[in-house]
Length: 491
Ligand SMILES: Cc1cc2nc3c(=O)[nH]c(=O)nc-3n(C[C@H](O)[C@H](O)[C@H](O)COP(=O)(O)OP(=O)(O)OC[C@H]3O[C@@H](n4cnc5c(N)ncnc54)[C@H](O)[C@@H]3O)c2cc1C
Ligand code: FES
Ligand code: FES
Image (cartoon, rainbow, N blue to C red; front, side, top):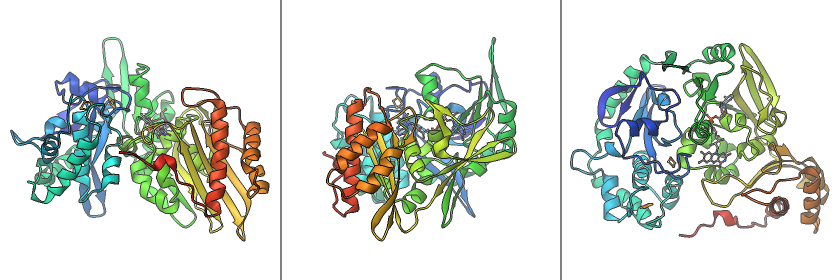
């Protein structure tokens, strides 16, 4: 039950911790108070730290450093990994180049958000050899600051890279080989079932490394809670104050961390993070890039999975509409039985799925587009990044000789489940080039859905904006490019 912490090569033992404890709680209980608690919901970034994970590809072994929201990540999921917080950056009195740049650019005022910004910039420093404004914005997408107005922080990021070639190597670069061998050692001895015992209760935690092991444990304990990236489940713990009695971490199940990419489909293991699936998804579906960039924030995408997004069954999850429009399947497993279910039939009611007791999502099968098919994806939310959709629409069209002959459209935010708009699908085929397309789309949408009013949007807004998104897609289809206002940012 060990992980590496900051500049110590000696592993930290987690024996005795409650499996429901978050990384941030562990840090602050152990007097590592640099990481702050703002929202405890993954929204503000005050708690951001960096986690290093050992990656082996063929003969190459390296540590991948990714930012994480420590407030919603479980501390036991750090086992076998390397946690770096803001206290682990300076070497003695010598500030890390990232910290020096923040000082020089006046990137901190009240300082509450600063540790989180520093850690996001530290991840950027480790992962990029050169930067531009887009990369900086992406890396800071999970950090809020209400004092400096971001400009000095962005300037700090530019400063780091302007001076990177003259900077000393930081502790983690200098000690890379030692850290790799230390992580290899702790990885070899881990993955034993764990039971936390208090006076009145027992809490179980498992972290299987193979799919058969996972299937067998989950079949025996169907009441256990599976955790992948924890970006939904963590909120149950920190916002709803739930305590789970049995937790199974699926992040280390090797077979569920793979991606198969062939001419016909992409098969994505349910434990693959958005970060890892990004390039293969964007290569096959370039239109998805703008949605993925707006999916939560960088630290969430680093760990959150598509499997978790589907299993969570939120009516406003972003990937389900896309995957339904693409006619995707989910591979479900219970014990040794595997079945495939069309994703459109997976959601059976508000936050209810077709999963049976002890059954889990093994992978997602996404068919590729053929040469006469195209996909568009639109997300409407109040903020550019780190915001849940009011409406998410995915539309796949099929053409014959340039004429639209079929469409498959799915929505999030319009119903109690992610759902196809079957009336709209028929309507647009016969009215694609009609001057009254928007009105006809609106009427069809009213037949398909009765959306709710809530804090994100009114029912009427959802219907009207969706009809306009159809119009926008039709204009794009005719090569009339409508600027994506949500992507036009002001600094
Ligand atoms: C700040 C913030 C911003 C967010 N923004 C967005 C957004 O823009 N768009 C969006 O769609 N979502 C968003 N989310 C929600 C969340 O990030 C996604 O739903 C994410 O994909 C969940 O994946 P996960 O791996 O973290 O799931 P987890 O939290 O680990 O699991 C979620 C649920 O699925 C179950 N589960 C996980 N894996 C499996 C499996 N293989 N089989 C069966 N059950 C399983 C778990 O038991 C749990 O009930 C946001 C969340 C936060 C905290
Ligand atoms: S405390 Fe706000 S993201 Fe963690
Ligand atoms: S410096 Fe005060 S919130 Fe960022």
